[in-house]
Image (cartoon, rainbow, N blue to C red; front, side, top):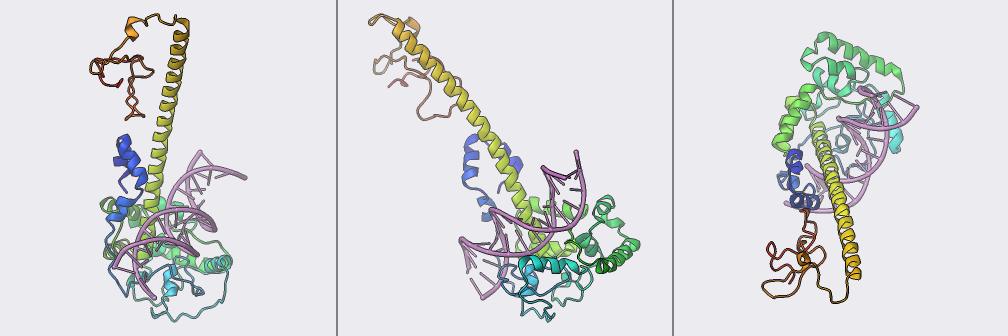
Length: 304
DNA sequence: AGAGTCAAGGGGACAC
DNA sequence: GTGTCCCCTTGACTCT
């Protein structure tokens, strides 16, 4: 999809096209995904298996799907419903056990940095206040101790990841360059950000969705204005029509019309003076102010 | 307390 | 069959 700043400056026609082709440009630049068999961010979809209980809710769906991915972690639950699975997932500490998950992806091994950014909970606000480079050993220790606290917390709710400013900035920067990522780019970015590829992918998906939503809002505003303008124009034309009808009734049958309204097309010599004669049939949405009466000099053939 | 934000889950569609 | 996308939704968290 085009960037918002670009779309916002589009003309009406371009806007209409944009509406019809939502997100297509974005898709068009999506590189054909090469097959990466050892992609640690393995397909997150075809995951109709029963979920293996993982301590980390941020383990992508794909993580427990990849049976061939050397994950021999025993399943602690069978046939959990969606909700109960979520409940189970959040009961366990996130950064404990996450590292013990054997993964071919080194990125799956949560670094202290990502442990903080990915599994913060009550720390979110603090995390925003402190920049990520300020994450020192004390902070890491605090996180670790909190992890053990969480273990004792029992049924706590799922924790929410908040990306650090630096992570967000880098992701934004990357998004400006391409709104979609190929697997290599994703891997590289994930490594750079100490995030899992799945998290990068999700961020881009949500970012695209936000862009689209914003564009939709802009489109909506534009269409509202169009509607208002057309309503006004319609009102004006209706009024003009009424005036002309009244004028016609008030005049004797063969009384010549006022000179200003007597118009003749110079090419076919037919009388004009039609209602709203300035509006071209080809431009029904023209917002340009129109003359109330046909102007043969401005538009010699409009009456034909 | 309720609205807003945003990372993530789940599912369908599609290309290869 | 796999990987990725979009869409919709959920739930944790923040803001007012």
